[in-house]
Image 1: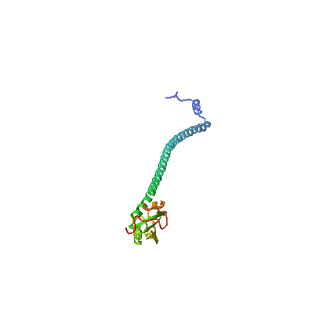
Image 2 (image 1 turned 135 degrees about the vertical axis):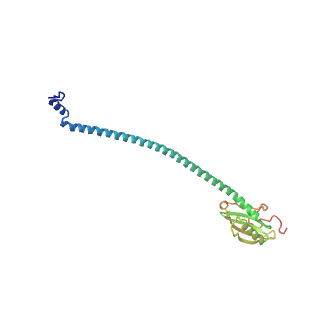
Image 3 (image 1 turned 90 degrees about the vertical axis):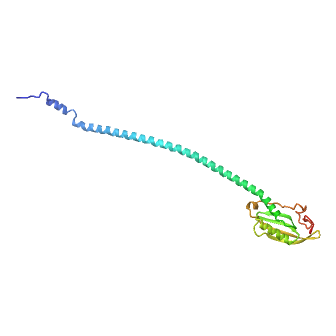
Length: 221
């Protein structure tokens, strides 16, 4: 029994199917496919770079905003420090002025509280921390007591020096003319300048003549 397959393609159709993609074009099709794949890869990489660039730019924007805030905060800190320095300088100046005002008053009060009986002052001068006191006393003991009281007052350095003592005659009464020098302990007081101070009971205390600077009461009274 002979069987015939009528559905089988003819040799001509087989040749036609084999000739649909000629061998000469296969390399071109393969190259075109590779080009498409390469283009797709480049496109994907460009998209990745674009996204990464956008993220970097966003972070840069956030960093710039934070930097601007830090700059404003730094400016506020600088202003606060400048204000603090200004206030500190003002307070220091106020303290110096107060100390300068209290200095002469404290000096005069200390010297006044150190006066013994039978001694009165003619003149008091200050140059820097050095204070010189001139006066008269009824005896050398009063002069040494005065120097010792100044030394123990806590306002002057030790020792308080007696520069000179001389005997003068005032209205037929022998008195001791003395000069005492002391160094102050307080720098603010030492910086202040004290003018000549006269004894309130002696109208001619600022002069240096023998007839000036009489004691408040008669000697020996």
